[in-house]
Image 1 (cartoon, each protein chain N blue to C red):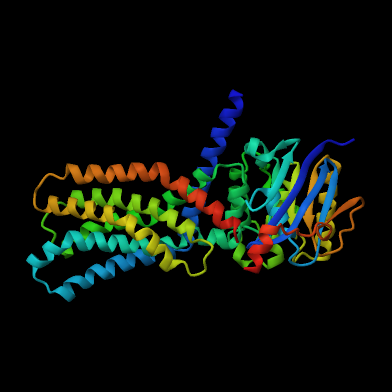
Image 2: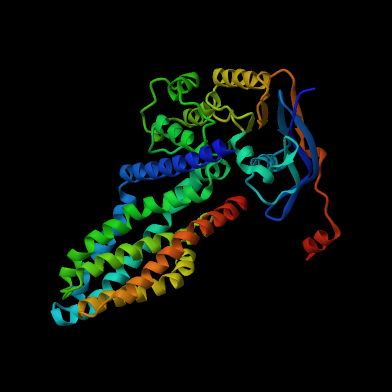
Length: 221
Length: 234
């Protein structure tokens, strides 16, 4: 049995006081790839942000290696690579400068070889060009270059394939597969079909929001 | 355990340095962002003699207050952008999830902000003091502005963090920050006033220094907490 990395216990999330899902529970092991599913507005991004630790609105518990995340934030954040909806790339800086900042912020969990990583995501020759001159897909590729540098076991990826072409998606899926095969854990959302073998699905519609009496009163008011 | 602690402190200084360097680089590539407040400072003060009249006696009385008020407004003008671009492009989210303590990241951003607004403002002020016929106390003017603009950058960061998720937070930001700037303005302007009249200025300067120490300890913490709440709720 693979090591249990991430446990979600009775997780409930809301956005702007509107409940999205409740009572969500899951046990995520090393070597697994999870795709969070649900229609637009069902709380996929909110769940990923809650796992990453952005979003105090979550009720319930998140455990990392069997311990609540808050008990050892330093260890958890070094185990985490989160790439959100916005790529988090500075337009005035070059891809190399952007990655250099991420490396300094990562407390040693990002490797130094940015040039190779940029070549892997198809940006060889663009290393020193300001990112504002890149296309949307290339901008996302700069952010995704971190996938080739990170030694963090837990990858939380929100729509990583947005604006990426078919060949790029295939290359990224291969990278995710390699990470999972090496004992990593991937939690992601995607509106595209993910073709990886053994991908598990976490369907948010299976955990509909439950209104407590008190909350119902509040909504009527 | 000891190795872990040294790893930790190395990671924090690394994050501080990298964020400071990044923000200065961004300022160098987008000079408009920090030249705006400086030009405002310059223009507003050059207009005073035109509006009030060139009488140097009158100007000398007004000079300390005018210099300080304009420095305050110029700082206020520059605050809105402090976290805005990081919020818009998702870099702020990455700061929140990174292992580096938000305190150091925020402190680095504030220091970078001061280096491109408060410091040039201070360096410009003696020239503008001459224009307003400030009779003396140029050293005090610089010293008080040096301390005062740093305090204003720190305090302003809390306001900027609180309003970061609002699209038009400028007015709210001013309302939050202005009352906190009033004591800095009072003691700063009175220090320059005293110096211009040849009185000793130890007390107001010491109080300004105390404000700076307090802001340095508390403001990055307040701004970090505000950023966590605001980025959460969007």
